[in-house]
Amino acid sequence: MTNISILKSEPPYFFLAPLAGYTDLPFRSVVKKFGCDMTFSEMTNVNAIAYDNEKTKKMMEKSPFENPYFVQIAANNVENAVKAVETINGLDWIYGIDINLGCPVNKARRSGFGGVLLKDENRDFLKEVVNAIVKTSKKPVSAKMRIGFDKSVVEDRAKLLEDLGIVFLTIHGRTVKQMYKGTADYDEIKKGVNAVNIPVIANGDITDYEKAKYVLEYTGASGVSIGRGAVGKPWIFLEMKQQGNITSEQKKEVIIEHFNQMVYWYGEYGVILFRKHAHAYSKGIPKASEFRSKMNELKDPQTARKLIEEYFNV
Image (cartoon, rainbow, N blue to C red):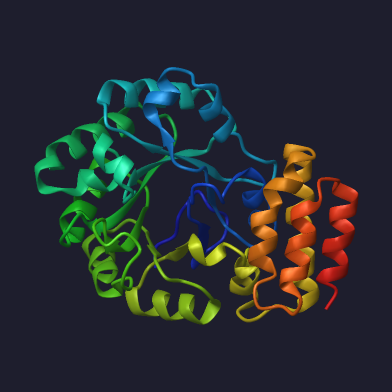
């Protein structure tokens, strides 16, 4: 496996994949503190960055724990991609730029963002926009792609991206049209690994250390990127570092830290935002319904923290 020079550690690497609505700043703070090697912002639109959108600027902020930290961008316009990169060049806290070439949602497809750029008819535009981003950026540039739009083009696109100058590549083992159906195709990720000389990070269906170990060995990837597998289970990165299951005390420590970060960054509204995470954390635990009902009624941070501490005191 090839080393990623911007990271102090040697492979394998464990990355948090961007996931809209979940991998916000507090969540990233937690996983970074508990074993994650690199974090990425939620996907940001270059058009919004180019026009100085306040909400998007907020999305690009990072916590003190996040080093190195990449902002993930999606582009459907070369001119605005260049403007966005010039803006990012001036933001010292951002270490690098990750280009989204995999988002499968219909809204992104219709607007020409993400995975739709993997279509054969969009190959020239993909080349143009990635080349413009790499040439303009004063920071390292990476990319995250799916294996193709409706068929695999993983070897061709991986090689194209390498030739354009990206420093590493994350590959999700599904086509865009698959969305999240079926299973990730590790054979195709392996083809991507073998097609290039830059580090490749494997992504898709990685839910525990044993699965990560299998994927790393089978594909030859330099690391794994975990998105949905970390929802309700941010301690998965601690499991990766420990190479096995963690204790209930460690789980509780992660949950409390996540709650504290939510309140720190969002104030009392963080208690409300934390509810969806509390629901995920309590899955499979006795009296989960009772706990969730109580959480849904609380707004005071101290009362909510006490309830969480008592419930997860197992």
